[in-house]
Image 1 (cartoon, rainbow, N blue to C red):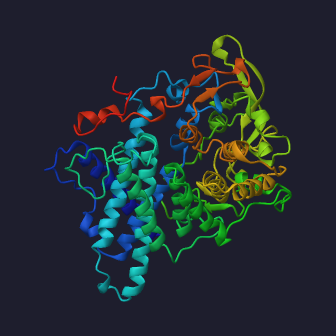
Image 2: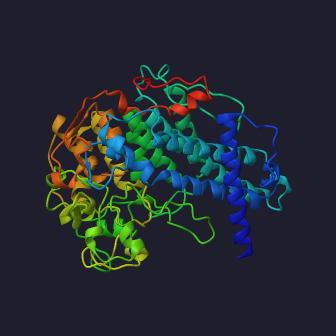
Image 3: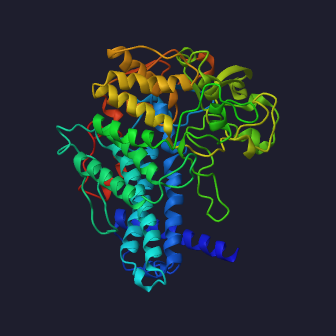
Length: 537
């Protein structure tokens, strides 16, 4: 227990170091002050226990950036599958589009959080590269451990730069990648340098290089279904996603098929049940069991700082008031966003996901401070309602418990790889293979197979991707790369929705707000930055 407490203390100190490093990177001031409340970096890398603590801290920080409301909800709210509840204005600027500005606090918070995390990963890699394994009793074992830690750090850097590039870089186009601006590329701890924006080619090539390194360094950690650790397969899964968003379809297909052909993962069967009689799809999302998860980080561990986000994904069930006040009145349930009305028809009756991703629940329609309170049964998102094992309140309405959003995150799933393979095969000219992968997924979700070709097949692959990955943070970026605008239409219940924001919204393809504005505050401290087009005002 003492060892655990010490490791936690060290990890906390290292978080302070990372934040301090980013502060230096951004501000470059007060350099002659020597902090007295943390372990010097050199000492923190003095032995294998120190390296372990740094790796532990880096992977914890990675999990907080992989998922959570701020990592997924802004872009989902900006897209076309949600409408805002009358009692909320969370991410209202994203939902309304027209009030979105470069000084938006979410831009600033996310942008800085990724660079803080990058400072952490850069510091770890620097410490690992300078460690003398010859002082260890078993240098070979020490090297294997260091390789694993380095693999984690390289994966982390790839993920952070992917997350930055997809938000603040213009969409990748091979013909202009060498001149299109992306984000500053910081590969080492260098607090005194003001970095300009690198090109798309430089950043995306770096992401791929980092993932290749991660795959090589994690060769002894191939992966397994439901794994809660960063494996070689996790790096490969991100690489296929990167190729997809780069438009490199043959490479995306080959990479996704590497995972598919490994046979370490498989889609659930439509009639598959767990021991309690719940469908395998529901068990995956609401019980954290199953074999489709390539990476499913745990919610928390007793020997780690509690830095994982409790609310996974978009967390579209707002039940905090109920939980905190030990209330038993379901009318207090007011999810910040409701699924658009058109989704009811988009998911067929036989689609197993329909009953897992959505359910009917009583919700407030008009709040009391509007003069009256009424309530009705509304179709709500239940994909991220949480694992019943983590709930401490029961309910007669929500399936026996009050959902709290607590569940193991699922940032990399086998279903995504099948969809990548389907789309990449189609765009590479292999209609038969694309159809096969599409039908594999459709049948696993309880749907009939289809026989399509040409643009009809293309559209069905896109539709299936939209259904499967709903609210997981992909929709806005998919609309952008498909050359489509945001057409928000057919709201579910008008009287439930916030009238401050457009219920019907038509944003054309190519609108500058599909690429987020560089946080305005950065231009005060880094004169080398250039703002994205359209955000200068």
